Image (cartoon, rainbow, N blue to C red):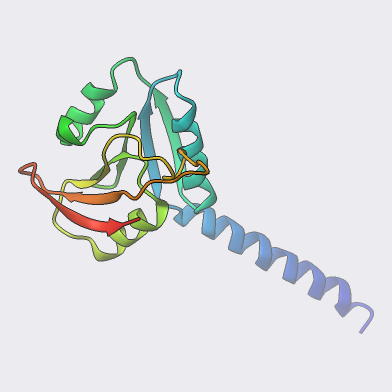
Length: 148
C-alpha cells in the first residue's frame, strides 16, 4: 500500500493536468479587433476570457473597416468587433449570448449590442440601462436575440 500511494497520487495529478489541457484545447477562439486606446474593450475581452473563451486581440486604427470585413453593417456599430467561427460579434455582447449563439448555430451574420450600453459587459455602472442583443442577418436585418 505504501508503494501505491505515490503512484495513485501521480496518476491523479496526471488526470487533473490532462483535463486542464483538454479544456484549454477546446476553448472557443475569439479574435477581437479594437482600438488600442479603448479601455472598455479590454474589460469586455476579460469578460470573455473569464467565461472560457480563448481570446486574441488585434489593435487596429480602423474598427469600422474590420466590422465591414466581417459583414456587420455599420448601423450596429460599437467600439470593437470580434470574429468567432463564422460569426461576427459587434460590441458589448454578453458571453452567455455568444455561447447560446454557438449552441443554436442559426444562419446569421452574428450578434450585436449596438452602441455602448451602460451595464453591458465592459461597460459596468451603478446605473445600468436595459439593452438588447440583436441577431443580425446577412442582409442586414435583425431581430431581438436577448433582452438585458
